[in-house]
Amino acid sequence: MKKEIELLDKKISYLFNPSRRAKKIRLTVKSDGNLMVSAPFRLDENRVRDFMKIKSKWITDKLNYFREHPGIILSADKEAVVEHKRAALKLVHSRLEYFNKIYQFRYAKVAIRNQITRWGSCSKNGHLSFNNKVVLLSERHADYIVVHELCHLGQLNHSQNFWNLVAKTVPDYKKIKKELKQFHLR
Image (cartoon, rainbow, N blue to C red; front, side, top):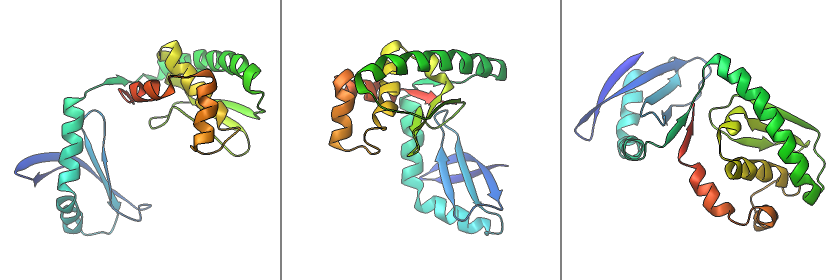
C-alpha cells in the first residue's frame, strides 16, 4: 500500500509491504526512485515510521543518488524475457567455451535467469548462473560477467588471487566493473 512520510523536511512516498515472513524492517530504494518498506506483519506501523526516521539520511541520500544518476534501466516484458533467455544462453555458452580454453575450469551446469539484483553467480558445486539481460550489454561487458563467474570456479571469493585470474583475460576489469554500475536491472 502506498504511504507518505516526512523525512528531513521532504514528503516521501513509499510502498509499504507488511509480510508474514519478514523478521525485520527492510528498506529498499529502487533504481527508478521508488522506496519499498517491508516489515513483519504484526509490527506496529509507528515503529516502522520511527525506524524510517532514524534512517532518513540514508533514504534521502539513496533517493538523491538515483535522481542524479539515472543510469540505464534494463527491463523487459514477458515475451522479451523468453527471447533474451534463448539469446543469452547461446551467448554465454559461446563465451564460456572461448574463455575456458584459457582457464580450463570444470563447471557442472549453466542457467539463465531473469534476475533483478545480479548479473551472475557461481555455486560451490560449479553451477554457473547468468542474468538473461547479459545479452543486452556490449561484448566487453558481457565478457567480463562471463569471465567473472568462470573465475569463481578457481577462487570462490573476491580475493586478490581471484582478481588476478580475471585480469588474465580482462585486464581493464576495474573500469568495466565501474561502468556496469550505470545499468539498473528490472
